[in-house]
Image 1: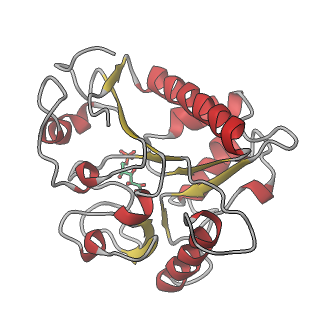
Image 2 (image 1 turned 135 degrees about the vertical axis):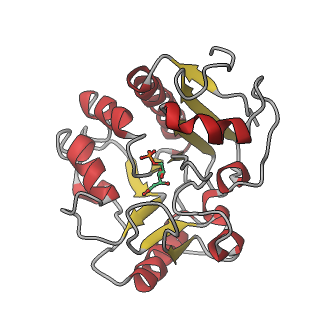
Length: 252
Ligand code: 6PG
């Protein structure tokens, strides 16, 4: 697993590069398995990637076998500016006209616990490897994750019981410190762990202190007990940062 972050000039260049990486992984998945599934996050980090997706009309072409899901969601209506689905819809899914049947939002019309149960069942049915079902399972290919200043990722916050949950893909959670403090639904570490490739994005100087806890200056070691440091994936965990987030790190 490659831990060394890839350093981009800024969030704009990083977003474009990550979009290209996702297109390559999608092409590979479609060649190998005939389908591609990507889970995305909220916050500001994925904005430039979403715009790059929109400009390439990712997942919009007729018959393009992408499925879009969420690493975490704030339990608010889709039109609320805090909605993670709403962000992706505004910047990517609506401008690119991605068909609704390719999109699996968290059912935020339900209370958080019920929404998490429903999402857990849906993910398990679509993506659980090896479970018996008349329908062939689709692989869960990519999870694009952000990084909070406290080391959280998705809505997995330091010290919260959701970090220790096993046997579930998604759970209800709330944010102890990070705005917005609305109920949330998040993939668990085990749920994320089913993905082939986890891709972290961290742009901006406010990510500097937490990145330096996660990595040493040469990008090889560092504290791995923060939620983001505990993420595992089936094939790779990649970190994409920008120069202002990691000024002393080696260049890509
Ligand atoms: C959320 C997120 C969360 C986010 C980080 C980083 O819904 O809040 O998915 O994990 O990725 O808080 O947020 P920024 O990208 O805004 O820095």
